[in-house]
Length: 269
Image 1 (cartoon, rainbow, N blue to C red):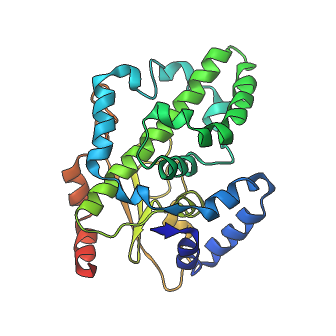
Image 2 (cartoon, one colour):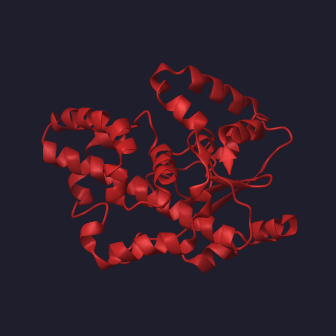
């Protein structure tokens, strides 16, 4: 169980993180977001097992109609910049965490986007984005809607991949923690003891390779002034491109990539 007070106490060792937290709390555009995130406690998400993610992945592979991206073709919507660069006040990871804790389980994509929390947080914003994008040259409302679904669907799948990796690590005995405040604000996908962990499956648009390539800020850079310093590792996995799959990384690859962390976790268990 992890609350926002645990996150703040842990990351306040960084002046950069503390300043980022203050700005976030004072940001008028986040006036709905802040109280939700600060009140959030992870319980259900910390009980997710690899089989829970595999169950959803297998159901999608068995029935293509359940795929979050449906029949959308990337080539048709990738140039709709208004949607590609859309950053709603509630981050998608916020909403996934909120919905999971409310329902008590990992939702399917349809369950996620139809949940009252998702509707209350995003439906008005989605309508505005669709209207704005639909007015673009050569674009239609149907394409704008498809672009929004593509964006949300990819965020949903990214979350599934992260939860699969975290659950595999946890099944090996590592006390892995996570919280949407640490993820969305401090860019830490999860942590174990004094080690912050960045997780991702290779994606040339969002994050790829070593250094600072991609769009997501590395937690190691954001928290570089921490005293005493955190350890930081980046776990990067190659995607699997089987038809209808959620492209989860191989469990054996996860275990090999975090071998040192697993050893450390076993030593502290």
